[in-house]
Length: 137
Image (cartoon, rainbow, N blue to C red; front, side, top):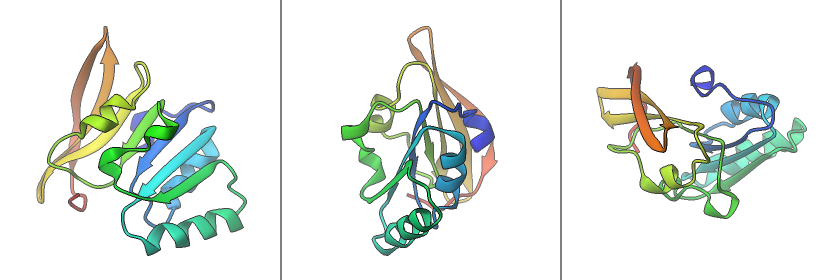
């Protein structure tokens, strides 16, 4: 997924699904700022403590509903989602800056595709990258 979003050093990234914080740490090495949201309350607290202990000052973590994104820090250059909704939530599309990308698994259990969304000529283009299996949203 990280390869698909092609992060740049100046990017601001929104990650939906903090989990252990592993992906947030990888992104924290590659981009300027990472905003990570996790819906399961204890998970982001543990991840945030680990990230702070390891010295990641450019990663922010919060408990919340990823469907809503993080509007107070939008827009984002890149959005990456690590769980599979049945559609791409409109708030995430709205929080995507310019022509950069959003990578998101979409579909029901056992029938999911990883999509790369990019704006081209003012239109949002959606391209299936590969079949995947993620936890449902």
